[in-house]
Image 1: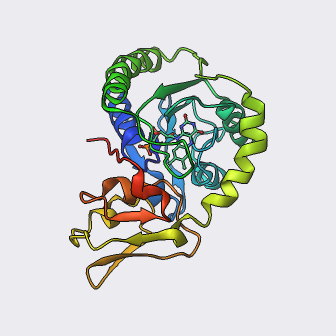
Image 2: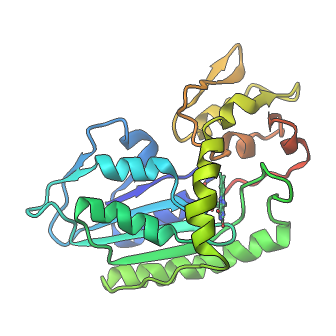
Length: 256
Ligand SMILES: Cc1cc2nc3c(=O)[nH]c(=O)nc-3n(C[C@H](O)[C@H](O)[C@H](O)COP(=O)(O)O)c2cc1C
């Protein structure tokens, strides 16, 4: 069984490739978190999580979901547990954060993977989507990486190689908590330009159903449920969704 969270489609694509190859059920965390979060696992069945890296760690919704989950194996543990995260650049100590979440449940991690994909974070100075060549090169390499992941998962073997670069501890354990505070208010800064064609794709793209269409235009709930994934911004076919002023000069990317 594979649970995924995805704002702009990268992690969804990875999750789909894995679920297809491993013949696993695929479940969106944004929907599942509103249920009892109780699941049946067959003996030998793998349990996996696929998600994007946000500020060098997993999105909070992934951690909240894991905390809430119950599985019905005899000892309450999965037979084989993995996670795969997608990132634009590097993952910091995402693996340490995930291992702690699993340890709280008494689960042992069997494998973890990182897959570099086109970047989607655009809300700070000097951050933008990748240029076309880099985007395409990352997507080509990702196909091979996911094939390797599927070979490892198929054999139920172990792999813990993650894409870590400089100062991971500072990024994950000092910067990330501050960044997570700023994510809580992201949706209060969204606005829509006159280019909006009222297509509703933004509302459909939101993985936590945080957008309502009011008089044809998107309205964000601003009740703390926005994850800050930027799915609505990137999905807009007219670049009509803006977050503050910074996105007026930023590019868009959505995995097709
Ligand atoms: C809020 C936010 C924070 C991000 N932080 C990081 C990061 O710390 N490191 C990184 O390499 N990429 C980062 N990214 C880029 C995404 O991890 C990457 O583009 C991912 O593949 C997006 O996955 P998705 O399409 O499934 O949402 C961030 C993106 C967003 C929206």
